[in-house]
Amino acid sequence: MRHLYGDFALSDAPNQQNFWAQGVPEDSLNAPAAEGDLHTDVLIVGGGYTGLNAALHLAEDGIATCMIDARHPGWGASGRNGGFCCVGGTRATNAMLTRQFGKGAAEEVRAAELRAVAHVDELTGRLGIEIDRHSDGETILAESVKAARKLEQTRNDMRRTYGVEPQLHDATALAARGMVSAHHAGLTLPVGFAIHPRKYLLGLLLAARAAGATVYANSPACSIERDGTGFVVTTPNARIHARRLIVATNGYTSEDLVPWLRGRTLPAQSSVIATDPMDEATLRAQGWTSHQMAYEDRAMLHYFHLTPDGRMVFGMRGGLKSSAANEARIRARVRADFDRIFPAWADVPTPYYWSGMVCLTASLTPFCGEIPEMPGAFAAFGYHGNGVAMGSYCGTILADLVQDKTPRHPLPRAFATPPPRFPLGKYRRALLSAEYLLARLID
Image (cartoon, rainbow, N blue to C red; front, side):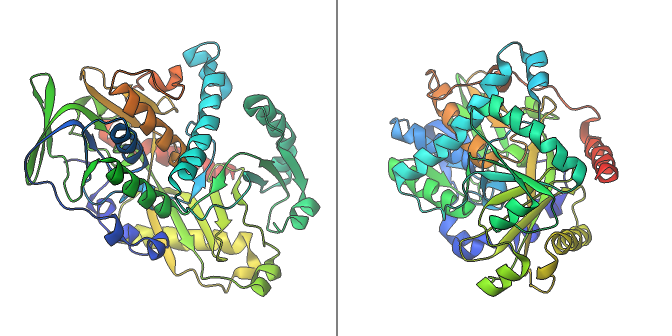
């Protein structure tokens, strides 16, 4: 299989110091490898939030369902994200959505963002999954005076877009909320919550198995062939016959497994550090005692929140190369930014560091639907770094589409429209290089 990034990115090395693995180790997510000649109604390739939501809902509908993963369920971004269950999934503005997809398209997308968060809320409640839930919505932080002035307009836009009342905070109000940092103002959108991403993952996996789905690990899809009206997917030790197929590999999509998918995803690295637990005195020394999830209003995004046991999880976008040396450079950069934002914690150890791939599309919106030129095969991808909610939402929609049912959740036109290929083919990472350079100059 051919991927846009090198072997290092597909190894365990970028994920060896993942804090979330302390609570949910890999052994608890593992499964046997697929072997022999197997048959199922629906085969799902990819065991992250999208694949697991699809598997769970298909199995609950009584459909024979099999899911395979190249490593173990959640090995990719679903097991190593920052833990933000929030609105998002698209980088397109309302004006762009209207221009590209027609009148009402923006409203459809924003309604889907809200419904995606509600879906995770309702699903974890129904299944009784303990996800270490915390945070009341998310707070945007302005890193400059100029950015602070823009928050009033952002509040008005969010009020119209999401139908809720965001709350503005100046520096004094942020301090009163226990959010003292190197920021000038903040804006809280009262939608979303923070989670332990691997606890959510494990809960989905156990629920899918209990509902009757079969799960295989260490079973990469090596090839997909037509078999009459169905498909045969070959793994190193198995041939799996399926009436229908779902591809849910997102930022880890192979360039040569499904020809139509080639060039339609653009993986982008996101890197995270986590501190040791901090006691109340250490938290008060900085003035950040809130467990609110927050992110900066800047091009090179930082995102962070305190976990229930007092660790700060702090992430950043921006890696472009796949190597041990580059990981070391990024880790140092993330830590330097952490120290700048939280100077009182400059001596707090950050023993955990990991990175993974989020997935972008040229349309700046997710895709969720049948794969063109491949009847009976479906895919969802391109959550733009907000896959906890949106990946879960799209996986549930795929479970209905693959059964020829009307989706239980609204499917925006923007999501149902296939995204174009990125220019530059296998060199398309250069697009990110130009964007990141401009972003650093702006920031």
